[in-house]
Length: 84
Image (cartoon, rainbow, N blue to C red; front, side, top):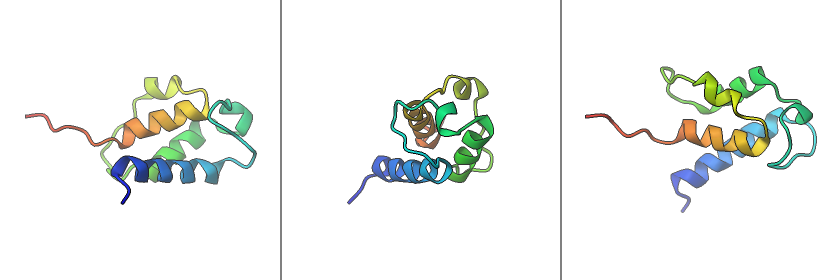
């Protein structure tokens, strides 16, 4: 049985693949595979289920490769601990 992280990785990979039409790997720069900030936001919006979740633009600005995008999206999808 897959745990939540593996399921999220699969969903992330599928969402990224739907938006990239060329061969790529984790070291591929986003610009070279045709992704720009708007397409990255579209990918994030496909994956985020909480309509109130905010996206930190400074975190997005630090994303330059497909691997960094995967890591950034994992962070968005990670369950947040509740504050008491």
